[in-house]
Amino acid sequence: MKPDRQDFHERLTDAVATNDDARLTTILAQARAADIAESFELLDETERSRILFALPPHTAAEVVVMLGEAVRGDIVEDLDTKSLTDIVSELPPDDAADMLAELPEDEADEILDQMEDEQADRIEELLEYGEDTAGGIMTPDVVAVYGWKSVVDAVEYVRAATQEEDLHEIYIVDEADHLVGTVPLRRLVTTAPTTTLEEIVERDPVMVLASDDQETVVQVIRKYDVISAAVVDAEGRLLGRITHDDLLDVAVEEAEEDLYRMAGTDPAEIETSSVFSAAFVRLKWLLPCMLGMLLTASVLLISEGHLDGALFGALAAFAPMIGATSGNSGIQTSTIIVRGFATGELAATKISRALLRHGRIALAMAPVCGVAACGLATIGIRVLIRMGIIESHVDSIRAVPLAIGLAMPVAILVAAVLGIMLPFGFRRFGVDPAIASGPLVTTANDVVSVAIYMFLAMLIVG
Image (cartoon, rainbow, N blue to C red; front, side, top):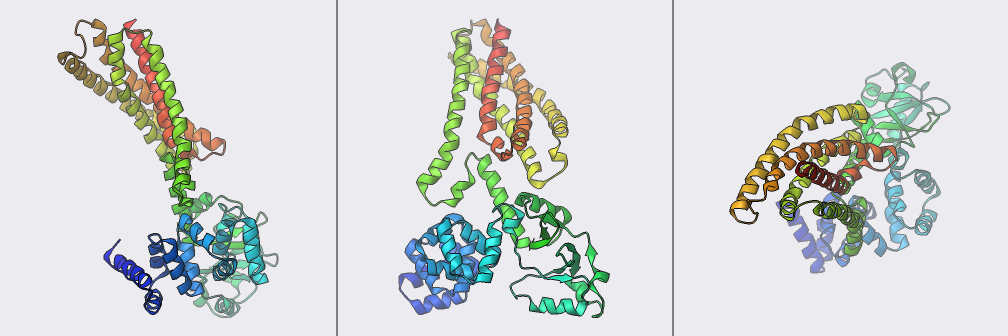
């Protein structure tokens, strides 16, 4: 923490610890919701409850929305239905829908029943969309005006909009609510009042379908460099909009998901504060990798029966070099592929282009790594002989560097192919390709590279 944030946290906890309600109220009144939410991560349940009930409903709602999913889940569990209803009622429709989606269905329905009908209806409409779709993250708060209206009419619509709405443009629709275009606020206020909106509308607006995945929304807004995007249904009717703050939340969420999966865990880990639940999430990935390594062990055991004992010992000593180097090479390739998928680059979706580019990169690296591995193995063998660990009279021992020098480039080329094919394969079957960039690529490359290494060694010696 920076000093000022640390100071705020200390003053906040001190006010709670000394039961100084007046001081606590003063501190909270002068603080930003984001700073309060940050401190919540470091507080226990009792301290959180004291602070939450000391906040005005609107500020409490802001704080709860800004919390991490695990902390928010713990807080929501401790609140009664009335308190939850008060908080949800203060939230914008999109944030309210997100929060209710995290609750059990019966509890969410009970909260909706206690809210005003109009507000509840808007939230229920958003809940019909998947939480990871454009419809699930959009806000229905838009200023939509018919094209035949005048500029002065549009200005009145803007004035009537809620102050919480961050407006940069108004949407122009026809009588059937189909989106026609947009008019930036700057143009609106610099145009003659009697001008009709049809005369100044910017047609062909940036829009996304309500059913589009949120990752697609990020790609569209980034590609066209706009502040917001309209959300429409399959017939082109305006439903809402996605703003830059929604975009930032989605971008962070998508990046976190990819990082978690590439690290060999799951986004579900950030949704729980339970140590045992988090451990279970990680074990789901670690245990299959252990089974995969059994295949590597099986390859070594099978090879042992076809090789001289001293030779096998020398080969096995350098097997980790082959596995680690090819595994890292495969992760480098798959990470670049997954990154291209995440950013929506058109070129990244072409497997032929990926094979051509990354295949050539692997071809450039393979001989360099092969020569380097051969040289290091030669030095290593000589050191082991001088130390008396390996018997110098075993002629086949001197074939080890050659086997490593040949196996390394082959393993790197195979790793590059796996690093390309696994993400594309996962994507083809609707599975997050980031999964392929973590332990899966490493485990697969370990098995394949060691098998290649031992097979070439047996060919050379035999």
